[in-house]
Image (cartoon, rainbow over all chains, first blue to last red; front, top):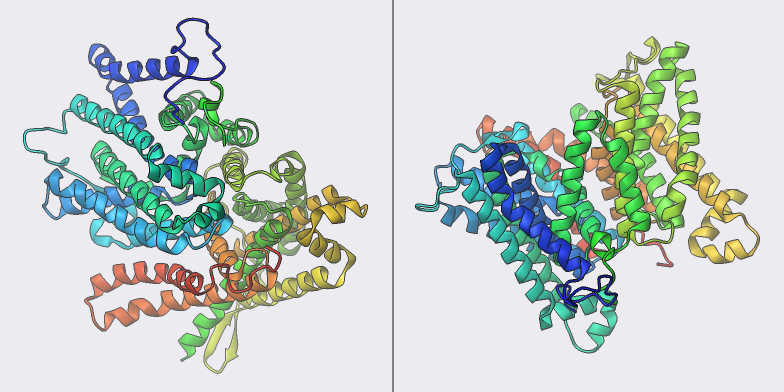
Length: 327
Length: 305
């Protein structure tokens, strides 16, 4: 089951455990770990901000991977939890509650609560209905946010103070970066534990054959609902981080093309691999950044590329390193 | 009372436009089993074509006819080049691939027509308002939209239920292998159906163009509304799409017209306007949620699925 361990097709002949997949992941983690050092030496604070953004969106994508990759629930409204988490932080900050010990739990709880409502309604349906309903419920909150005149409405709201954690100063960009990195790594470890637990096996069993899982006595609806809520909560945390990162919230952070971006990053990296989201977010966001520098029309290239990924690159980039798993 | 009737007419008009979009979506889903996010792009392209051709020919009618034909051709070309390869794949891959197409089309339109929007002006005889009831004046053009879209809906019904092509479409929806085995060119049939859906979307776009600005991304929000319609109606059912489109159009319009006023009675003006806008935009989704609680497969579930 474990994506962390060996690939069956050992392409390198070096030590058995040093598979191409592991090499790439180790290199990626090393690069991410050294970005603040590079930023400090070169004074390039833009790189730090960009990679911080990648870390946060990788966390959001990770939560989508849990339901979409492992659970087979294609949610096309996942960015709504980024928005709810972000708005929880922004609204509390505006109302004078600056403590992160309140803001972040509220962000997580609000997202989990909305995921519970959406999940309870949408998990009764399947296939395309599920895709469209999750999309519609995300759109609903998007319109609610536009109507929140007190919190900026369509224009969004600037957050003047980042979440307060006692002596921990999130305004320190390097510290905030490493905090996001640590949360992402903890999230990846948690996901790895979850999918290899009994709960995770039931979820994956329900993906490949739900009727069979029910027949052997698992109430799959409840399992899937819990899974959906966990994913919502995790994405809400990513939303709280994102609001702190940009110091700004707006309805646009949960518009449906953002949900599309999350799906893109999840599929691109590899949906059933725990490190897939980090790979997907890195490749997609760096590609976007690079293309927007070399051309005025980046999506003329990104768009067809997504079609190619949809048609030919199953298993995402992680899948290129050989198959670690079967059905 | 007159205000209510006016909003009712607006609701029907919105509903009919949603039907044009939803009919194409549901047809394409019912027959090719394809989730098409690029459907809103065809709506946008129809509007851009209409604005451009009307400008060239100096005629609103000629411009819209040319735009309709052009959108049909774009749709069929899109099917042959890209969409065809997505058939039989996972729905997730449809979402990903057509999301890519949507990004591509937005950017292409920006490249060709520039980032600024366009306007399509109506001929002068459609700019007037007529008295539909004593004391109630209603814009002619909106009445034209209602009449024309109703006619298109009737034509679509006749096409699907009474012609040989329609018979093949319905047969393809229930058993595509058998239709292919009986010697029907199923590839051509799919191209035609996709082109038909594209033309309907383009038609909705060009009808709406004189009322709204023609701009990039105009198809995206209405696409979500069309998804809601398709979901409420039952995916694959044209009849369901018609009923649901009218329902969504009416609920949305009348909600927007009356919810803020209703709140005014209980709340201050400032609070009521923001909350009113939020609530009235939510209304459609609440209706959808309620319907799905009772009928998870929509009002008119397609029989074979």
